[in-house]
Length: 112
Image (tube, rainbow, N blue to C red; front, side):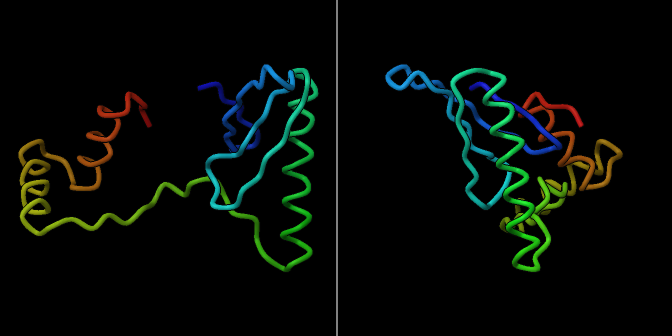
C-alpha cells in the first residue's frame, strides 16, 4: 500500500492504469475524503485542497474537524482475558496500559 501523510492525516494512494490517475483516500478519519491527480505534485495539491475543503465544511457547520487518532480507544474483552493480560503485565513489571501498547507495537512492527 502506498501512503501519503499531511498534517497527521494519512491517505492510501492507488493508481488507476485505465484513467492514468492517482486516487487518494484519507484513512484515519470516519469521514470519507478522497482526492485525485495525474502527477505526484497534482496529487499533493489535491490532498491539501481536500483537507482545506474539509476544514471549511466543518467550520461552516460549527463543528470541530475530526483529529487523526487520539491515541485512546476502548476495547471490550471477556473477564478471563482481562485477568490474564493484567497478570502478564504484572509479570513484566508494566502497567496494563503499557503492556498492551508494547504488545501492539510488537504485533504491528510500529514503535510508539
